[in-house]
Length: 511
Image (cartoon, rainbow, N blue to C red; front, top):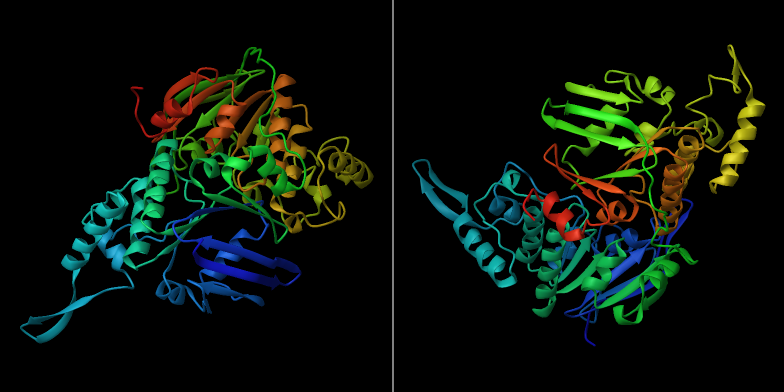
């Protein structure tokens, strides 16, 4: 096996954190090597070192067998390493060719009436880009404006940008996070083609299904250490999850048949605008009944965020009606929505779900601290708050040094558990859960999925909004697919497939 890259004994410390602890990692030529791990496991630190964004405190990197120092991203590019970030580094108003040559321009000498000047050689660059896209099956138009391209095409631009800079090693950081299932499958074909032509790929993902679809080798990090590697043929989703978490994990939630009751939430012809006054939710109607989970699927950015904010009083409704238990709450405040027996697990837990500087105990009663049994007039019963906090910390397995610890100092998974504990421990009739497991490890995902299903089984109506199609398919009883602000179709989860949902997510209504 000829190695394209080898990292040995990589150690990186930040204040109070050992992010990488004697990590060994290698990448063979023509190989797709998947890197798995929980949040905080050290994956991002490792690849940031390989790309020159961080410098290791200890250890060494070799490229093509030669020890080297990658001092900066510019240095990484010069040594044949390219990185495609999860959030694309593109300038929307520029064309594809302008984005690709930005910072890497070639020039020709031109003459004008005022003498000689340098001009960008766009024509030669465009010809090179067309040749690269044809060679690797990437199908992009160099003259198109990036703002007009779908997400999948923008990602291809990022890959061609790395290849244009003569990268032989590609680091793909969560590359399917904003893709439909069909776009993800297309990406895997491209990745396989790149590997067959000698490119070497580090593939970072949290989706276990994907590593089996495309990886040649899988390595798992936990708590800053490399804990093991395996070939896909020798691993299972369960074994990889156990390596990531350090214990057995239930990946497929076991839920009983739903028995829907009366409608709890009714939405009629709802229209909502974003902060730029663009219509993001366009005439949407649906209902959610007691004892069922309605999943809302869709690629992020198709109106799901604005829908959730409107339903919870965080965003003004432009038109239409929202009813909870036959009461009009179209223009209700967030507190009025909460007092209507609604639980809200927000998309942005730090912005809308927690007061980061407040203790864990105070965050656990944010919805009810002003009511009995915690308040009597203007007097707060802190002993009762602490009793409740202790019970919830134990029941929901919140890992915290103490209830007086600032919630902002907890890990993302434990911050999310604080929100879920606060919202689902109350006797609610409706649960609105928006991206409830975003950025969480498989252990925290397992826990939160169980709590959502338990809320349904207690008779609550659950609206689950998620960009993770596997999560929607696993938890939902019915599935509504949003595309460009509209619900294109609502499916019975028993008959829904990844292919059908993926086509709807891409705007295809005939499937």
